[in-house]
Length: 296
Image 1: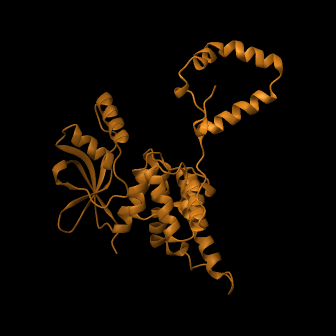
Image 2: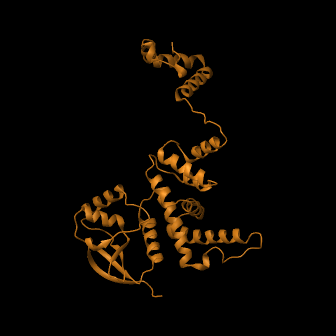
Image 3: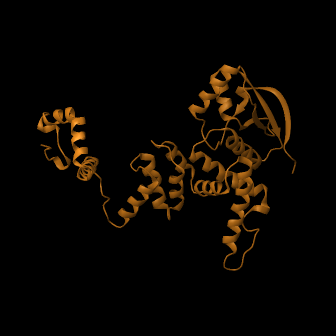
């Protein structure tokens, strides 16, 4: 098999570049940041990377945000480095490393890219893959998998300045997500955290996994842990307890009031007496406690 060969070119016509099968979509924040930088500096700092297929077609390897920024700036050409004799695995690894090294990514995308990097890394470095290292008859597969992850994690941690533990946690989380999961989680109203991803990775079967992902995507659970607990309760026929924020606040105020010394209570009343006056003189229908009871 030939090694990838770099053919240096100054510029490439943007309309000749194909973009396909990317690990993540470009982000508006990333594009706008690049446009601002290009506008200020007058140049794009780094070229994009392309692979030339045997048919002559040019396909993007790395630089999705740079390419989109150039298009929005209405450039007709862009600086590029073109590679030939490129395998799919080599191209994917370059895409992953370009993003991990240079792009600002959230926890979700970082986990996905690291999991993908491990998969490609082991194909390119079979000596590091699970199954090469042998344990005994009871621990063989477990030892092999641990050695595989440890080998990759150490190499990746050193390359990108992460800790081994952080890399392993990200790999575990990212490896459990499929394309449908990614689409849902990227559309979630709140950013998905590493803690959420770790809970998803621990989901024991497909029904639970799908439930947790859907709950996060819909915004019906504030975290994956809460979604998983709700799923477990429903599986046992237990209706989840719906908390009343007004009741919770009322109980918290009463608890603080009960513990406060008399001098503090007097100072508090002096401080909020105008608010108390407004509440006391408001129409009864607008001032209620939980369960619809009148406040006064």
